[in-house]
Image 1 (cartoon, one colour):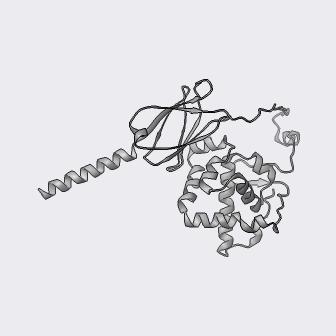
Image 2: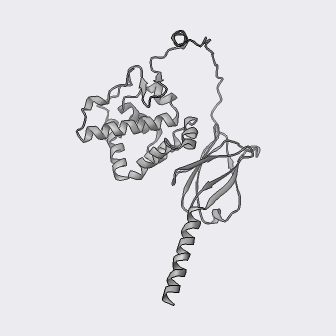
Image 3: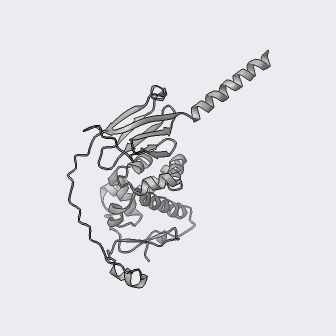
Length: 265
């Protein structure tokens, strides 16, 4: 009798665990202004680091559990965070409305460069910027050309907040945050999502920093203002992880402090 009770208990626990790991949140993303469906909206489970996008009808489904936090974003719209509850996981499809950002839309002028297909000639035709970053296909490293932004080390604000030390301590005390950022750059669909994002929301969540603190962190890592403004969220994550690995080596005495200067080609 006792064996039967234990068996039933084991099966029950197994079933509960299985159901927990296979729960999915389903919904549709629409515009709050006109109820127009928003296709290709980004849905990211910040807790489990799983992401997806909405289909042509604005529908999505994503693996979740109760107490997970979901970040929903769409270009030109205000992002929202959703705390998953048991009520939301009962199978009913959610209708989630996003509001357009109030920012003024500015005219963008795109100038094309005539290329003929010969590398030695075409490279001379591409407009140069002294702060542009050059990525060489097939190589993991990205080189930065130009002098990084200098910072006032005597500033009282700088004395209160040293972002590289904060980053080192954060990843040391909360290794899950580091693993989540590493996962973001390894999973293909997450890489694709982040390569088209420029709002820094995901990093602000995981690093517990605002945009000004993020900028100061990258300045301390000797990245230029141009890169900080123009890089995608994926490039920013790669830069922060690279900075952390270098600083960790410095802290442990494996390399000299001079390893952090500007990356040049």
